[in-house]
Length: 126
Image (cartoon, rainbow, N blue to C red; front, side, top):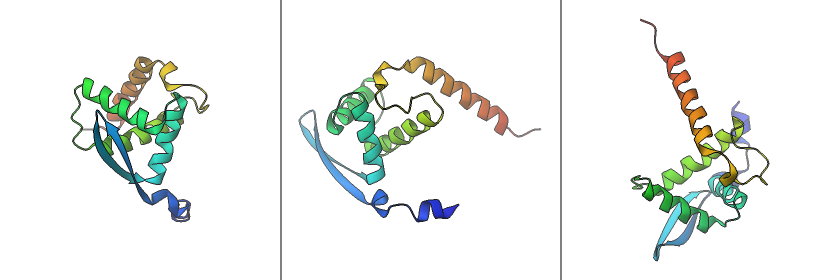
């Protein structure tokens, strides 16, 4: 099992800092290359570059009332969630399909149902 991870390209876990401007303020985000690769793919699906998508995620998160005290962690979760939704089939693997074209409410509903199912399965018997 470990060989799949140990012998992966070491460049994947090298950290890189991106500086970007959000609402006129310069901010820096440091993450491993693998996260930058995934987020770049997500951005490209909707015709954006990475800074545009990150700015959009920031604004939409703030509009939704989220506390983004650790924005870098939020971006990592976005990348992992994207991959998990692809694996579950909720996001097509065909990167020509824009994410904005997907029915987010249906996907979120399925994810919530799956989480409830998992909680029922994991619940200890009394």
